[in-house]
Image 1 (tube, rainbow, N blue to C red):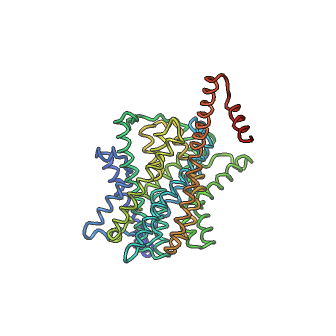
Image 2 (image 1 turned 45 degrees about the vertical axis):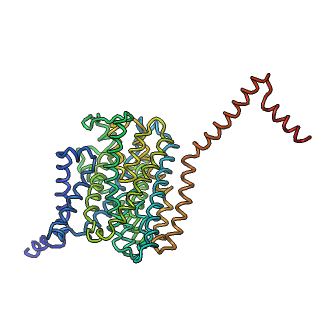
Image 3 (image 1 turned 180 degrees about the horizontal axis):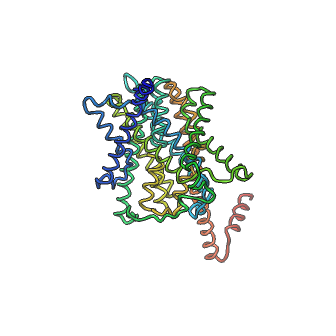
Length: 488
């Protein structure tokens, strides 16, 4: 009996729980500060980010640094990313009025736009780190700049995953901190730059910011759908949904273990999405065949599960920053993040004005928030000007995820090539530039075509004016006369 009680005091288990307790305390403190401090509330900064900042400050206090285990924080960030995406991918498709107004063409174009932004961020980051590698006497890791696309474009989890791979497999000293710091700065950019620009537009009368106290009307259908497991069932609906998420992740682990290639372990979130979609389709098929008679998943519970995972991903990711490593590369990060912010802002602004007629501002803020922070940042910014999600911007953001993975997939392939050395980084930069040109032509082709049509129309109009003023002599006749003169 005594040995059983001793096992309850296992230091390994309690050490892990202590790290979780630290995250919980910081998250709750961040929530209090965000609610009570007007500046924080207006900044729209995620609560998890504020909590992570408190942990960074905590680590500066003498004697407190060792209380936070960087390895555990990295593990939590890594797994939370995949679990959050799996929960989202298991959700049932739900058609509403907003989705009906968002065409397949626009959703595909939004996916192309996301791919283009990933590419342009990678170009900016690689251009800076390659230049630093050439100019600095002690050199710099040439391929490190590609992490800008992961930190800004895809968030903390991916930046940490590949930063760690770059560090362990390719010798990028401080690579994990480099990637996570970029992601953290991205959250600041999404929140602070997004809100500042929003207020600038408001003062110019170009934007109406709705009060955050506006109530969004919700109905029972937002929480429960028909044919779900009843609350009187012997097993709780939350338990079933969590079990499905865990089952998918177990399959993902088995696949990665079977392949057992280092690069594959960085794709845990992508494999999770693919397996979750297959599970979702399987459940739908079994329901149609009357093998399963009730919906096992609940969209509301899966949303809450993903929200929980992403909150802990953010706060643990920020806590995983190694301040000692950061002190030796802060100015390189400043250059990369500043240029990345400017280029991302300009490109999304131009694309939004061109692609999303009638809801340019809503599209811009949702995409800017997502492509510097996460999708939640984009939704937070969008809610300020479109609290009822009356424009297709929110639907574009959600449904463009799969096309974005397809169009940005080439970048993931380069992640195993560009960190090999300087030559490989330069070749990767050239490939990315070509991809950027292709994406830009696809996105703005309509504008180019319209310019040609407009020019042709103006020419035809000029000909008509001439024919009317000169006794009905047409351009065609004039062309034939010119042709006849040439023959003579």
